[in-house]
Every structure is written in structure tokens, then in C-alpha cells.
Image (cartoon, rainbow, N blue to C red):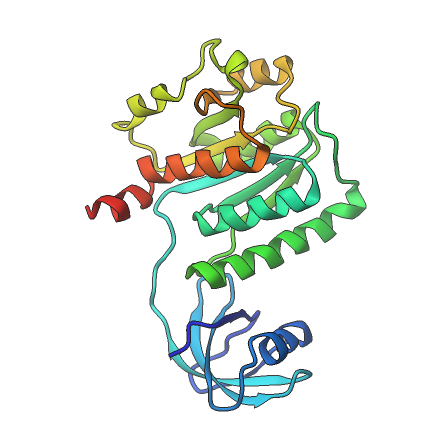
Length: 263
């Protein structure tokens, strides 16, 4: 059957007819060019994934019939939340997509002292919907079934308070830093190797703004249990650092290392 996939808020039951919303209908009809009798996967972002057969391929009212539930599990055993200091919108969109593919369970946006961008209260809801849309597209592509939880905070202190109140309160904590900061009591890239035997089931990873963390922020976050991490001798772009630290974390504590080693 086809691996083409589209998001759908409501999957119904086996043999139910499901009508896709207008935006998804247009994508299914005009981009994927699905036609009557063909098969497509539907994912709701809440753990449900199924195969459906196209019954009506109109771009205004695309209807499909649920024919099979899928029991695949591509979710990571590592509960990992990625915190992103606000950066340019297109760069953040890229990281949200890549982080979702890498298996994050939570995404957090916050304003750092050196962030050149921010969100007004009226912009938060719109940004949440955009990230959710990107996440849905990413789980379709990657075979996941659950959209990461999405939160926003006005600054680093509000972020730390929010983490303490949530399930991340006991999670292992890391923050990506440039070398000049991370050498002060933090881990070097080699230090990550010494963590390989550490049991980690939940983690929070923070990536700072394009201009780097303010010293006061680093000290505050260290007091909150975050370990500064230097990602090698090179200075990485915002989006590169986010993907690198997630990939290393999934290799050490998630399912990426197991899949690569065959364990």
C-alpha cells in the first residue's frame, strides 16, 4: 500500500467514511494527486494511524474509508523536550520539523536576553498552530503517531518555573553553549562520552539564541540543574546545534543508538 500520508483530526472507526478538511483535501487531491480507489495513511497526532481508501477525490470534500488500523510504534522511549530561544521564524520552523522527526516529545519556545525575536501574547496562538501543522507533517513523513507538546515562555525564568511544574521536573538537563562558556564547570564534547552509562529516561535540552547565551542566563540555568554542553570545537548555527544535541541524546539514551548498532 502507498506510504503517502495526510493528517486528520478525527479517524473514526473501521469502515467509517471520513471527510478531510479543506486544506488537507486540497493537498491530497492537487499535491499528492490521490484518486478514487487508491490508499493513503491517516494520522491524528494523538496516537492513531490507519490506512484508508479514497472514496471521493474532490479537492473541496475529500472522503476516505478507514480499512485498517496500524499498530506501528516509531515513538522514542526517551522523553525529550527541546527548548529553543526565539530565532528567525524560518530557522525555527526547520528545527521544529527536524526535531519532530528525531522523536522529541515536547517543544518549548522562549525569549532569551539576546534573542532578536519574540512573540506578543496575540501571536502565541498563531505560532502554536503553525508549529502543530509542521509537526503533523513531520510525523506523517517519519512514521510517528504523536505530535510533540508545544509550550511558550516569556523568558528563561518563566521557562524554568514551567519545567518545575511539569513532568520535566525530574528530567536530565542540558544546555548547548559555546566553548568559552561551557568550559566553566560544564561538559566538553568528550564529556558526553562519559555520560554513556548514565540512565536517562527523560531529558530537557536547551539551545540558546543566535547571539549566544548571556552569562547571567548560564549561571541561572546552572543553578536550576542544567549542564552546559560544548558541541565540539566549532561554533554551530542555531539549527545545527539543535539537531546535533538531539541526535547525540537519542543515540545515548533513546532508540537511535539501538537502531544503528542492531542491539
